[in-house]
Length: 130
Image (cartoon, rainbow, N blue to C red; front, side):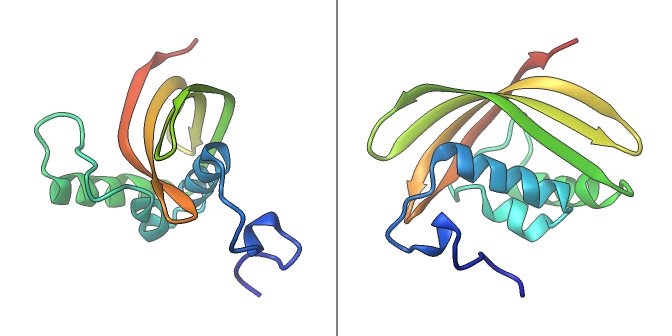
């Protein structure tokens, strides 16, 4: 069966998802090439980098996520930069691997509390890591 196992901490509706758990779920959606779930991780206030509109960004992300035969995203070295009741700022190392390309980058996220979970309001690449 799909969904969260009953013995998972996420099956308890009173349990809050941590920023790290949220970003792991985002990475899992990306790795599974589940574009809808991936895009749902972004808050309505999210503004893409550059001059792109939100609609153009979503179209571009959909194409880039579905084009490779496979994608694997791994996140490690989670570092909480700051956290308040409704916001969390996190840095992580993101390892991206597909059948076409691979790299490691340091990423910075601003997450906003959204019910029991979080939503991405800002995402920036802080550069590649050799």
